[in-house]
View 1 (cartoon, one colour):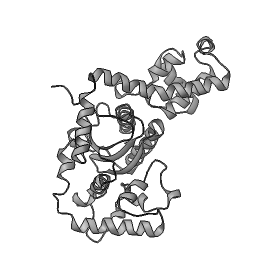
View 2 (view 1 turned 180 degrees about the vertical axis):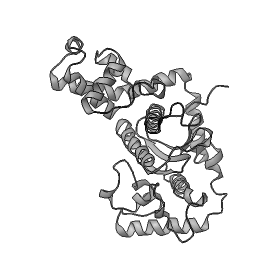
View 3 (view 1 turned 90 degrees about the horizontal axis):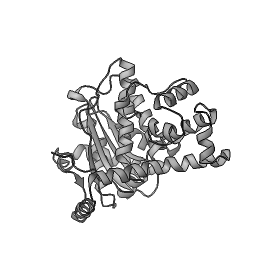
View 4 (view 1 turned 135 degrees about the horizontal axis):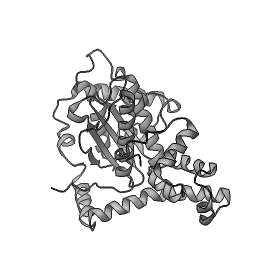
Length: 321
């Protein structure tokens, strides 16, 4: 049976969830949690994603992410593959960490309460899992975006976006008073939860109005084929990389022919490769080809030598190349 087509479009919001293979832990300790969030931050830099909520739950995670560009698939490939490689390297393991394909439910971002619902679902996960005692606050759970919501803007990760949730709750300003109102709202929501209100999030493929659902179905039916969609997605991912490459060539005063003529180990080529790895989700193979740097393993080794550390070069199946 063919896989369902991923729905991608500029400005899409998704509730993304994935579990550990055989429901085994994907976080063994605090350092794993931190590495996951570091990798998420890098993914946001590469893809321009904006995160509305997240929670890390031992053997699975939930993520509410907005994609200004239609690049969920390319970004998730890099994100999950890179975290898997880092987890395996740290714990001296190999093979799959996550169980099959991640779930990505499309969320209506019209401002009619659907984003609020999915963010509430994510932030209340520790309560449903009984990881908090009744007397504890939601902020006592360390691995959730909720505590960051209640911090001042300068203390939050740059990739965490709070304004849309505040807007859906009618909180006009990201101020101390506004954040206090936000905290009171979710603690009240916590006390009122009946366990059945989030069924649509667990079983559906989208969360939104009937009009939103019909528009999504129409957009899927108008696409020619999944392979054409995949090609379009790749071109979108590469568009940012080509822009960065051209910016760097303009700085150096190089033409494409001059780039090709330079030695594959040229320090300026390595500098361009480093920026492409930091700011995009293109593969090492793509970088090696476009920068005329030989094989992807050569690029990986050069980057490793340049910064003293790099993702392992022996696991191409995890999307590192």
